[in-house]
Image 1 (cartoon, rainbow, N blue to C red):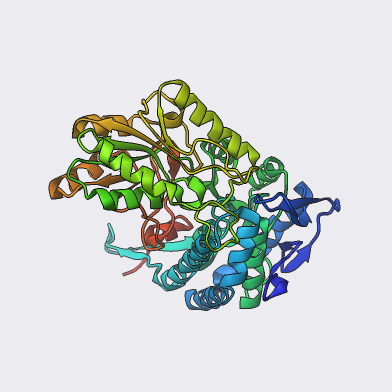
Image 2: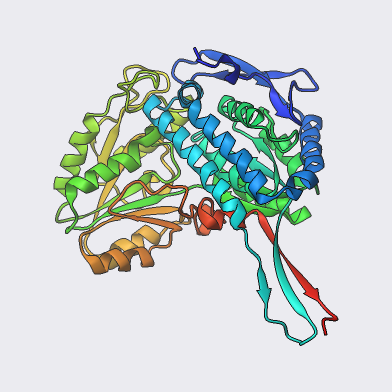
Length: 484
């Protein structure tokens, strides 16, 4: 199956050792395409999680004392090993997550880009010398690592969401505990195996596998040794973590749910807008937090855009991710399909028009047809909830003020998209949209060099770019007195 069979790991990674659960319990990792069991991994309990925290805490002093250049060297080795094993990592990801191989390969390269970026950022963590308030004093501002970091990552991007958190943490001098989703632990364990090969010291990077995320979270949140929690996932769970982190006043970064508007003005390049909508909406079968969730099209071009997008949607090939011809793989589980079915049924019952798709695919189980609905109204569930499936939902608007108001009428604020050829509007509308990220004339905005994150109930903090480094650093003020 794999060129390097050793990348398929079936134990957790703690303190430089591949370990089982103290209880001996294990849980199955299955392929969403057919339900087949891939392997089992340890179901770590609270005692095991505490051991991982202790290992990270013990490793922190020596790791943080290393020079930035030394840490960067190990990150670059890890980066090179990730790229060298791209095909195996992509296959593992497709098997446990479902996305097509071509997308998995792209994610591995994307994940590696964060390691490369933060390897370069490590030596650029600068402090300041501040003009003093008295002649016999000198004021310094130092940047130091926050300490032990817990990275809690989702199933939809099982490699990139790890490296986007872990690479800056390691570059800053933090040690980490990774808690991957119970649906996709194999990618995380393979990345840990490559980090081990790169030469990271024991305890610096740990991966805990568990089917009881709530119990693991309680241990992490209650531990005073964990000084930072970085989480990507649902808004509901993010709020629970934020409350739990208050008792020990931990630093928290949250990348939560989205409800992205995709706005097409009447002066837009419609062909480019259609391709941007396909890229944004149908990537990973619609299971991304920055997917186009609400498509607003100016009434003068709405029918033409809808016809074009319908035709393009019908060209998408559905099939197992391991099939190189597949554009849309399975959803992560049957509960995800049931949610999509509910949202589509609600929209149709309330007057939406089905243009294409609208049902489980003939392949059955976790496959759903690429779907497009028009005539959506703002109050429909499909515009109020994150779809997380291969369904486009279109409504119309009349003018700029109206669409900005409607786009902002949500508790979420992660990503938004605007298509227009008018220069002034390309500045004015993004500034008015209440979102952490806005793509103008593009449906693909994710990159290691830009700050990723949301506002309102879509999160706190930024990942990627130079701003992502700040999330793992504390600023220490030092006042030197007695200088005559």
